[in-house]
Image 1 (cartoon, one colour):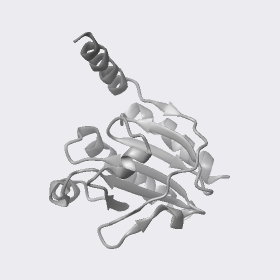
Image 2 (cartoon, one colour):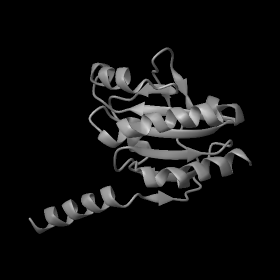
Image 3 (cartoon, helix red, strand yellow):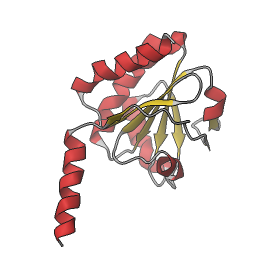
Length: 161
């Protein structure tokens, strides 16, 4: 039973402190069904991609969607693509979330969570910043207002490269 306490403490710590890494690994490719058509990550080469994993039950995810809409408006002309991967078991679970958050960026669905496993997602939301060559530069767990400036700075840096 002692291990349960350790894991609970680790889970709490991950919620309080965002995990930011500076990986330089190739982003695992995927093709997932989208709202209108399938989306393939490899087809986004040449763009900077902000990849976000979310679920309808995630309150911080709900708070991140307006900010991602702002990013889309501000940086899409410079080559930013935003792909948000929903991990709910059914699309019906995400419908009311999407109806209230009104995303203006790409939404795809991964009900089995296979893509999340390939990206080693450890919390919700989790985001990955991918450069124009398909390499992961940063990853981040959670969403807090105080993290936005640092995340946006990382996006701006990659857009200028």
